[in-house]
Length: 107
Image (cartoon, rainbow, N blue to C red; front, side, top):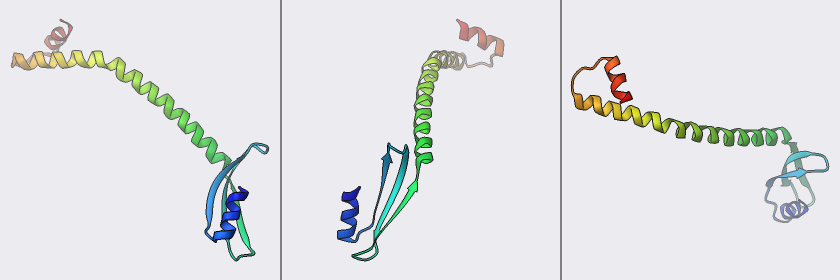
């Protein structure tokens, strides 16, 4: 952090970065500005809640990905059967009752 603040002081270019203070268990967003050669302004914002929410969202997204993969895999068989039944009905070319279609799908 001191390296970045030194760079801001020397170049006059503002910088923004995030740091984790493990000793305090907080995450900070740091914005540093060089107002003059002798004046360095630094703004600290506690972003711990945002970081926790992002980690939770990542975990939920990973769980959702695993779930959708499982559901997709589980539906491949039934969807394939439905597709075959639809092809058979299309080849029959005639109007078929729901009961007849169900029987065709089972065979």
